Amino acid sequence: MWKTNGTYWKYFKEHYYLDLPHPPAAEYFVATVNGELVAHLAVTPLFTAKAYRATRLVVMPEWQGAGVGTAFLNEVMQYHLEGNGRCGHKYHTFFHTSHPQLCGYLRHSKLWKQTGAKLYGSNKTRSIKSIEKTGKKGGIQGCGYGGHFRAIQAFKYLGK
Image (cartoon, rainbow, N blue to C red; front, side, top):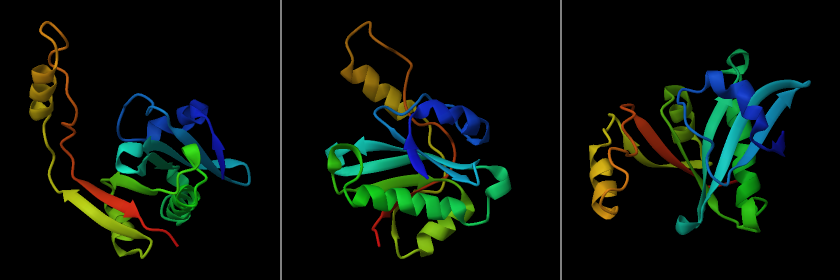
């Protein structure tokens, strides 16, 4: 496992369920077994909440279910909790997922606490209206966040 830049994402992208731009100010982590790429994770600062946010956890299909993804996730979260992340903050990390087996693991792990759940998708109408209301006249219209229409569960890494 090592910290890298976003260049490794191209090897994992086809196995990720969303097509989004790179997260801003992210630190990237990759895990290998005997030189074979196994897992990827990005961690972004969420300093307004005195926290980090982990995203883009991808475990290569041939390694799924072997426990390497959760071990990798826990190690990267502990790394940040110990103050090794951006700016040296000893902050907890939040993680959102819609993967049923991963949710089950996180929900039952003593290292994690579930902090929220949306068991149905949402649309981005509310976000669009908010952006248009706070924007200048003639500015960006019709853009918004959300609208993935998938169940999402939220977790906070508590640590060892």
